[in-house]
Image (cartoon, rainbow over all chains, first blue to last red; front, side, top):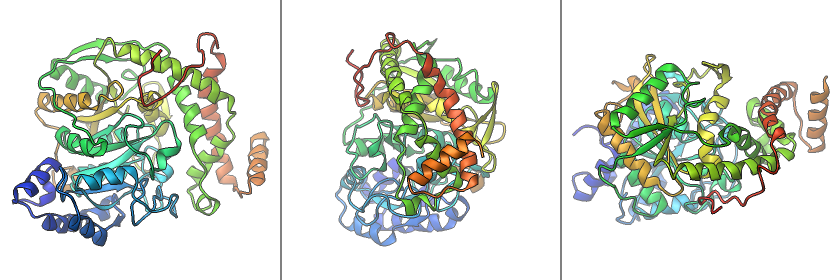
Length: 440
Length: 62
């Protein structure tokens, strides 16, 4: 048999369940794979050999029994408080809500997934553990803020990881690394012990190499079945300006081709007040960033300190006006979902940029990578709806391209159905593939 | 020193935080970029955008 981490999450769970794969052996192989591959990626800077063995010893025979998972540095674990890639624990250790869901499903937490410092960036370039590297090209970023989760799943260190998403932090790294990443509906699971508990934008997210894996992990996290609705045709609305038209043409073309390949009905969509959604999202984002304790703040990167300083000086009047727009945009999005099953556009307007260059060239001109990314991602966070990024192609540079789909509140199953339909329509050419840096 | 620098340093000092010049310079750039985007909210018609209840866990009921 090939390396156990070359199996998908669903294959690992099934093989353990049938007795073909020993969970102890899988754990051993997982730590070997991390030791072998992670020095190049820096995706999993803290591992839990002792704690994971203890978890396995007491794991219930749930749907993820014995399956190794990494979890972003934003969730409290019984033996470690979340640091959000800073120099110290920001919450006390304890069994956070998301941890309890994974534990109760039988999963085994093998390490902390690296991330962008404080979750305040979409590149993964800033972290107390060091930058995360993209497994398709180590000079490029893995994305953020859940870059470690996406890189680890893509490079087959683990088959599943849990991240979070306040402005695309699951969907953007998933797009950059060529894996599935799904942000769940805001508030759809217990938030205690989760660093995002203080915001109205943030939700956990799951990473997998294909739709079936994302479904299995999401079912555990949400503690509910997300049943497959076979063969259901979808009506999909695409908002073209600026979400498609202001993208790298190769990114836009790959997303368009994947949508067309499904045979779904694709319609152009207009959503009232969407032109103000970015401003409303930013007003909340800067207001909800909390300053960490001074000893932690003093050791943050210059970029994070500057973001926190700028946010702290922003007039609060923008929040009150932004919330008026937020309410209107939520109404408009709900109205749009009476016309279409899904909303679609590229997850990120460009493929993963170089770690050393935070600027991207869009048809409209140069933009910071963070501003470009949150423009594509922020609607799901502003409204609370779930969203997914699906790998749909490779850019001429060899880097992955992600298609974003958005669904109504609590319709994660629809997103996963859609992901599996896209996979079939594209001949599974872009899912569960080994990235270039690891032998593709 | 410009107005933003004075303001940022004074606010930071009041909060008991030391800020160096690199941080303040970058904060000014970020502030300027964000404020430019937020300015779109200055022009909204408050009657067109009434206060609505917001619960991002659920679809709006209005």
